[in-house]
Length: 482
Figure 1 (tube, rainbow, N blue to C red):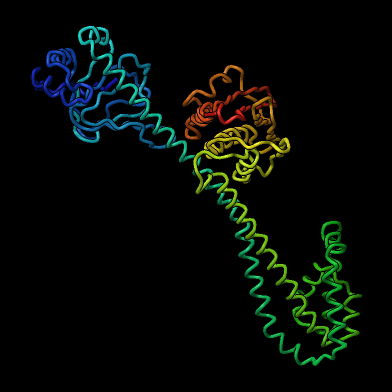
Figure 2: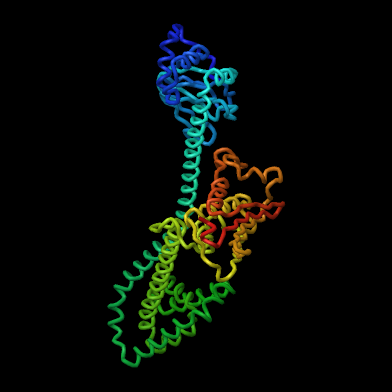
């Protein structure tokens, strides 16, 4: 109810002036003066100053409010100060006949001085009998209000989804971008080191025979990665460390500078002390040292360049996935590859799946369907995010796609705790959510249901403890879909 502090003004407005002022109310336009006079006689005139609290979230809603002058804001306190509603001069708001509103969904306060007329809900039957045209005016206002509130909530849901997408994408881009940055720094350091080393190489004055021998030795080392590098590093780390120490000792024995850096690069390549003995036999101690320093920095530069190529390729893959996900620069209705859309969505949410086992089960050679691709991706996002929320930090997510008669069937399975039977019929209701306050508005599944129905499809859920499956069926025939 409106705050008891908002008492009627000391000097009430004359009824005829109050009835005339009610003509400012949009839904009251063209309402006969006698009907407005009835409202003035049976209503309660109130005034409030800027900043006054009119009602609290959860208070019983008992009055229809005709705002003659001023502006009212209603804000939800749970989940942040998101504006739910703004009531301005000329609006009819509050509880209306035929509405199911029981309590206020947020705190209401006056932004500017407010002058309003309140009609208690107990007077609604008498009002509708005395003013028959009020029924049509009220219903029209109710429809406008539902559309506005739904638009605001859907916009907030989309912004929340966009924030999640941006966070996931930022996380995914950070890894390859950081790797490329580190590799570029390593490459630059290796190039600068070899700049001074090149003069020492020239001073060696190698013969043609020595040049060919060194080239053959390096080629032999470069071809060693597949059979030597991986087993040493991954199969026996202690053997790898021992091999690196052996190389460092060999280099130290001939007085080679930067032995720690050179030994590490050679060890990763699978070079052994015996290989170094072969090179020393060709060039001598000083020549071997100079050549190995140059060769080690070449290896470091090559690996850095490969890392940059791979990292930037990953970044381009992510950008491509975002474009596929959002369908940028494309017309609304497309021939949609549904498995590709599912994969793009999984890639967007990959940062949340570190400890989740992902299983894809797509029937080969599935036909494309005519659909609003961007909207379908909203469906996949809602369903997969729900599954991830249910799984927490562990479990299995299964995404399947196959033909079923003349429909395309998509299934999203998770091994979470399941949905209680009494809630399974309610999860598709707008604004219904089992999440904590501020974690969701309860529009994700409602939006998914509307999109699937827009495509003449069907969305259902089957859930037991340890096994929940959302099923989406979409028609293959374009004529059935539109």
